[in-house]
Amino acid sequence: MNSRLSFRKESIQRSSSASESLHQAQKAQGLKAAREQKPFSFTTVLTTQG
Image (cartoon, rainbow, N blue to C red; front, side, top):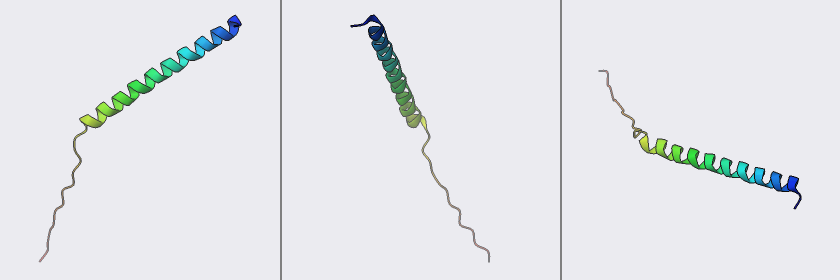
């Protein structure tokens, strides 16, 4: 294989691997943030005038 093509292939593979690692880290961080969120709730108050 041409050495220039070989270098390009390795460069693309490294870039792809780094991108995948970043994606996995962001996904894990997103799941962690979702677990740490407090539950959401509504409180209703009924008032009457009379």
